Amino acid sequence: MGWHDSRVSFSRAESLVGQDSLPPGGKALLVILDERVRALEQRLGQRLILRGVRDPDPLWRGRISWRPGYVLLEYRDATPGFFWHHDIIRELLDLVEQGGGTRC
Image: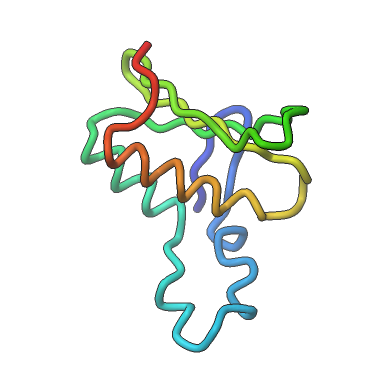
């Protein structure tokens, strides 16, 4: 089963897309996003909400907003149906783990 909010969802299968193109041993490095999100939510004691955003600025990649009771991660979702944004989500999760983002 995947994780989601009302605007975006990912299934386990989508999280694994592209693993055949990984170098040898790369599959071991592939972290399933929904498991990482669940673990981080549990550690923070707050819900993580991910939302794909289309922004005309080609340099914009995403943002983190800490809100009462949840953390909003917005990421560039330039091409629906493709999973290139997974790297951006991983970067945002890394920043959340370090306490990065704007406190609202």
